[in-house]
Image 1: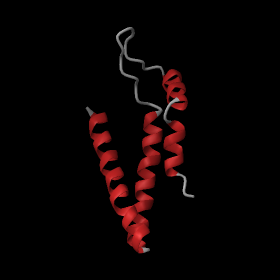
Image 2: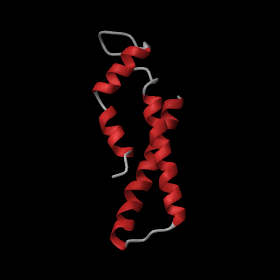
Image 3: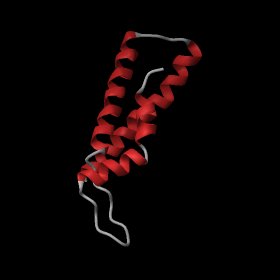
Length: 91
């Protein structure tokens, strides 16, 4: 149940970033408030990376839900970790 709320929260943060950053790029508008908001959103995405290391893998047709932390971490490192990490690194 909590994962649904977390995913909705991450979706909201991602939507804000997708709608506001093009405006900032197009009009070269810099404001300390927006810089603070983007910093907080980056922290939220970093927290999402940490949460992803502890979120169980849903069950499949052949197996039950995976709750072993080592298997979860290995699966996350092999799948979406690089993409998530690249999204929070400032270039």
